[in-house]
Image (cartoon, rainbow, N blue to C red):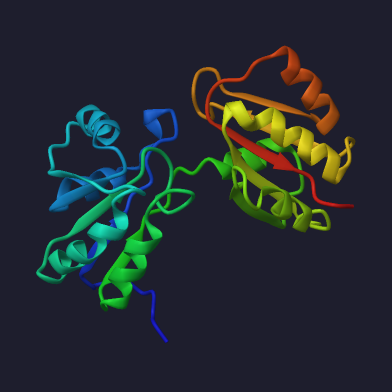
Length: 232
């Protein structure tokens, strides 16, 4: 059994939640950690670089994303074993939540080193609370498969009683709403949240049928969280 107590222990890897829109959402602790680590692993060094410039932080940046994580994990762990302390940032939100991070966290823990994930920004929590749908029990589904397995995944959720949370892209939103309407019924309540924490934040609530009608007339842009009422 592993203990998750981190007090007075050397931490090799920090996971740093970064703002999903409003840069003011970065935490004081996140800033302190970013200033102190040896290297910052970034999903996109350009995106994280802009944040660091805004925060007036100068630390070495290294790319770590879905296309290179399998190749780089072993070398990163070896560097941590030699004493380097690293921080992992995704483009926005908490690393490893529909973003790279899981493989690295597992490898660092398997090597017997400490990992610490800071609390902070993540898109699905404000979307869930803003939706007005029950949030005492919910399931986070992330992104649906684009093609293979998509229909099967939706069918498995037809009897789900908890509120369901999905991430979706603007060009697939209508397809998803129509598929949900067919599977769950057009009167199922849902909420589409986009551009959370930004100046054009929008939360549109209604039945799946109403949302389909709305977005037929209002083309959507920006990052999207779709929250759907559970069965019953």
